Amino acid sequence: MNTPAYSVIPLGGIREIGKNMWLVSQGDEMIMVDAGLKFPSEDMYGVNHLLPDFSYVLEHQRQLKAVILTHAHEDHVGALVPLYEQLDHPPPLYASEMTIGLLGERVTDINPQYADLLQTIQPRERHQIGSFDVEFLHVCHSISGAIGLAIHTPDGAIVFTGDFKMDPTPIDQQPTDYFKFAQLGEDGVLLLISDSTNAANPGYTISEQEVAQGFRNAFYRAKGRIIIATFASSLHRIQQIVQRCEEFGRRVAFVGRSMERMTARAQELGYLKLPPGLELSHDEIDSLPPEKVAIVTTGSQGEPMAALSRMAAGRYNAVSIQAGDTVIISATPIPGNERSVYKNINLLLERGAEVLHESRLGLHASGHASQEELKLMLNLTRPRYFIPTHGEYRQMSRHADLAKATGVPADHIFLLDIGQRLSVSAAKAEVTEKIPSGVVMVAGHGTGYLEQKELRERHRLVKDGVLLVSLSVDVNGQPLGAPRLSSKGFIIDEDANLYEEVAERLLQAIEKQLEKWQGQDRVPTLKDTESWLNDHLSRIIQQKTRRKPVIIPLVHQLHPHLEDATEMTGEDEDV
Image (cartoon, rainbow, N blue to C red; front, side, top):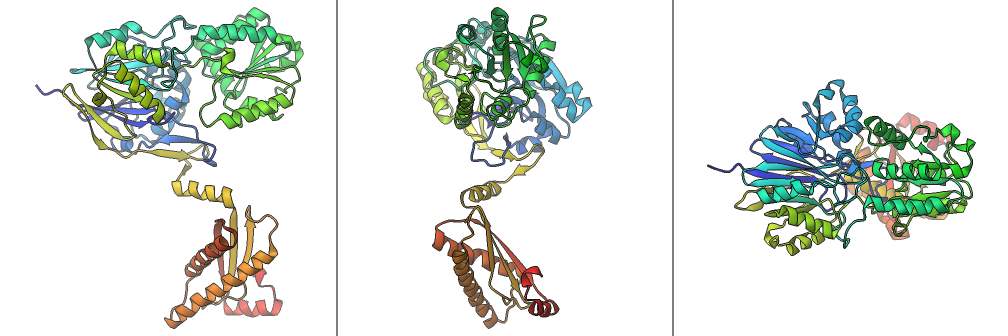
């Protein structure tokens, strides 16, 4: 009998942090694991977020049997709504109760009938999804309801760890399911696809329980209000904060739209527990003594519109930073966000707050496995083939080294690129093709997709500004005066001498161009003249200033009767 051919394709989350998306194919069927977004870097001007290019999925959507979400962080679920909005017939969505609870309304907002697509799963359940035999596995992460999964094949299981760590003392007392991962390894793992985020960190990631003492120390020292910024999805961390508030006699207020929404939903689902009377409304914050108040808010990554950033800038009505406040930033900056985070810290210090933000203070524990835990996962599962994922190349490469150290042959380890299809069987694994893939930039909150050329133009605008040039011509394309120049962000003081010189040289260049055309008995169109203005002005400005502003040429063609009126009024600029 021929063994069915399986293949995996990353559409994101490879050689980067964010926009995690995988396809697993068998025959003419496929399932998707995660559908995440990525937040833009500071030089992506006007870009709200980045999505995977799922054009291949749209083209082959009849083959898509399910989407499986490992947990509810945006880098794993943020592309779900844009994807489902474009699919003609979206497939069922499989996820844990917590993940469905947080995402269900987003899906039904697209179409109320999509409620029938939501399939809540439990760890250790096994589902037949089309031709795929899928088993779900509990893992510890920084959000409740995180899962890994195993796709059982005749040659062994294809295992996705999802984002995980081997926390032996988790807050919810549900450790990563060591037994099931070991059982999979005993039965045979064909391919392991594992989280590489902390692959460069030696040792073990500290337990969430260890954060408790760090918070106790901070609560003990604080004399005024305590304001804690963390991810709204970090419910284990928020539960720790609630417990410390109860221990130190403080009431707690949740501030920020996503924080308020997430904590309210988590309480409904039973994933966040507050003693009666502990929660504080926004209106009550100023009615209590400062030493009786704690505020949990968003903005740990310096996001400009998040609550903590607006407090730091003095633009948040609900909470104003006061001298004597203690601000705790309970998160590690995501690469690229450092500048924004430290800007907020400086502003908070200027307003008289004490800021605690360094991880050595024990106020943050990562949700990702460090080196010893990654090696433990490799030893438990003993995979035939291995793919590091969810990390930049340096992290994936380090994870590959760890796999070699545990006995995985070097030629059985694949550092894939986005879009590469890896076909796997017991006999061999090989990259067989590269499908269309990449990144889609979203500007605004709709489907305002941005092209690379537009982003390059924005870079030029930021670096060198914009230069506008206008020229009036007659019906034969002859200039009726010198070009007029104006700029934004190029020469602030509107250097009149420079503009006069440039305009004169530009006019001479246009006249020479016209002489060539007249010799060929040709009359330039408005587009021809605009092209000349752009080309010659770019060259002249580059020579004069060594800068390359975005040039916007405007050509006005005046007809004879208007030219007569211009000569009479002398106001051609008003025509």
